[in-house]
Amino acid sequence: MSTKPNRSIFLADDDADDCMLFQDALKEVSTTTELTTANDGVELINLMQTSVPPPPDVIFLDLNMPRKNGFECLEQIRKTKAWESIPVVIFSTSGQEEMIRKVYEEGANYFIRKPGSFLKLKQAIKQILDIDWTKHTFKPAAENFYCQY
Image 1 (cartoon, rainbow, N blue to C red):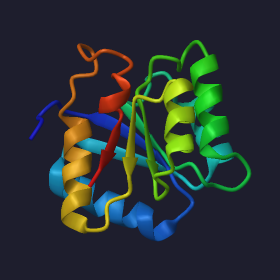
Image 2: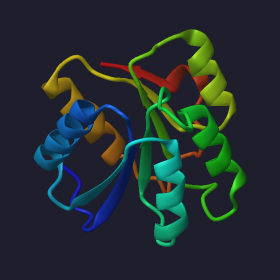
Image 3: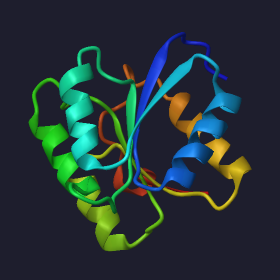
Image 4: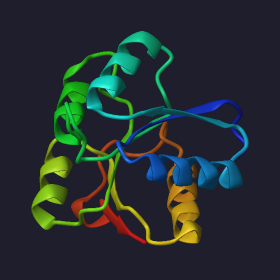
């Protein structure tokens, strides 16, 4: 487990149950990581405008949200100079190839299909937290982009 203190994750997801499960899994994986949640894309962008800097270490982004979806958020994040280098992990129930290809091309760092179990959710979160984003290539090869648990 990583021990880097005071890490910050933003999670944008309109499903309250998914947010609660993510929070519980994160607590079991890392006690030094702070989670900030947004219920939709508009809330995420407002949060980014008021909270950054400092930027979060990583953003987990659901695609299907009301008001502003994950595609729109990703586009805005990548076009905003202060946010463009923040790692973005797409975290979605969908695993459609077209969606995966689109977010890859738009600059997401990873695509994780929401796991079906709590244990697999913890594994997915741990995998992302274990990445040293300062040394990691910003955009993985396409074959390493999609992770299914």
